[in-house]
Amino acid sequence: MSVVIRLARAGTKKRPVYHVVVADSRFPRDGRFIERLGHFNPLLPKDNEARLKLDMDKVKGWLAKGAQPSDRVSRFLDAAGVAKRAARNNPEKAVPRKERKANAEASATAATATAAAAKTASAAAAAAKK
Image (cartoon, rainbow, N blue to C red; front, side):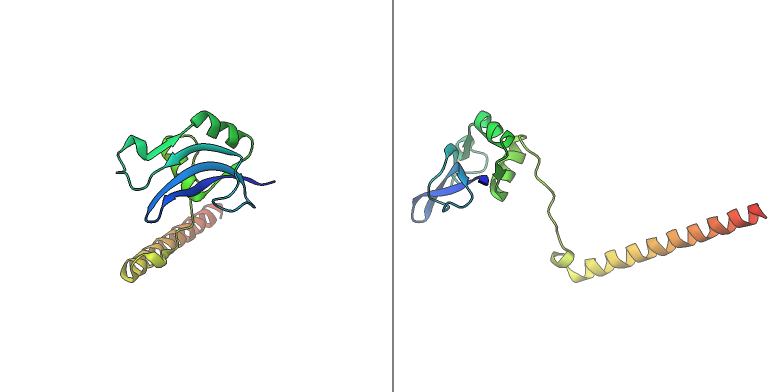
């Protein structure tokens, strides 16, 4: 049984509220869950303390048991300092083309300079050997 910590949507139409729950990964998003750990209200301002409420002792307990947090819950736990969020793959497609070209040229010149320095160092070592 794969256990996850995720958000289950509640509230009304256009007014979402999410429950932070521990559930079997095979269960529906809003379906049966094992335990409720807190709630999240995305409509409140980000600096409002009532926006996210979590029972940290229960969260730590479930993480120790091997529960995997969802992406959004990982962000919450990273912000709270409970669990470190893994770095994601950020492809360069999002960077504007001019910046990508400049970065590629800069890395190419750096690689060329490094190769030239290595070549001169090996030549100097060979000359010293003779």
